[in-house]
Length: 123
Image (tube, rainbow, N blue to C red; front, side):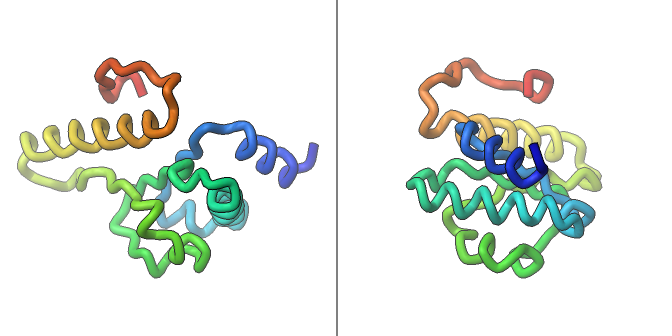
């Protein structure tokens, strides 16, 4: 199977797609192609909450492909907490909040996900 068919099959057979995005990832053609394709499929099929984007760096919306920017408010990316935060307790709290938000996003629209709390080690 060629790479495009493989990507399309993976999107079609997924409840959710999670993209962990850094500056390096945005430079890869296949990654941006996959994000665009997942966005088109999800909005076409009425599955707008299918895509989850996690931002690792302080990436601005303007750095994403036009199709992703157009749907930015619906996609509503999650940001990984700033690891350079010198206050360790704030960083730990921010990580807990991040994991809770991610779990809620994954659970949304998917009744098969367990309702137990999730920790970083289980994801």
